[in-house]
Image (cartoon, rainbow, N blue to C red; front, side, top):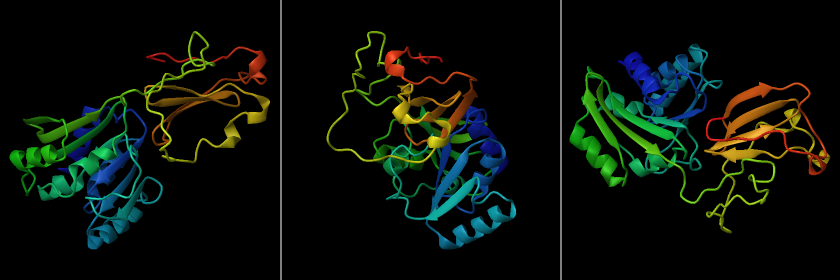
Length: 269
């Protein structure tokens, strides 16, 4: 059951080929997280309410050499998660799969989904001992005020919830913002009420020292493109997950205020 569920989730979301962070909303005993980690390059973090489940899951994942380097579990409540918004590119649930019931808050679950293509895919395949009722699933999602798509077929019962771009979000696609060198992102969301979403990598080691006036980082469609020391790195702008890195020998430039930018982005690249 878990192998089939993991295979289906990854194929339906495309994360069998992509990197990022996956959040498990109700980890149960960690079996779904384990199967997802085996079949992908995702890093997983999870919340589980039952302490016995957490201890069992941690022991099993430690024995599989997965705990701490690919998967971490936290004890917490599913109606009030302790993570920042948009922390995951993919959200799944072992509790819904194994118990056949939806607990916690659907809106809290969806709060974790990053904009610009983040996905929550919850449900269960056929053959689960505790069957998930479609009406129960729909009522839970509706109570969270979510827009969803339900599929019920030979792959089981699944609900897919996606988050598009944030309304009014801007972009920075050239050295000076855009083709007109306006140095303006046209972002309409900026207020004086803000906080840090994430911190950490890529860090200073692969970047050109800032006082040397290097090429600025670029942003589009939820991706942060960072020119560095003979390389370009792409990270998820909403949670910092490293998506890819391309080595470009002899590409670094300094004194960019007297030179031209050497990186640009469009819808596809």
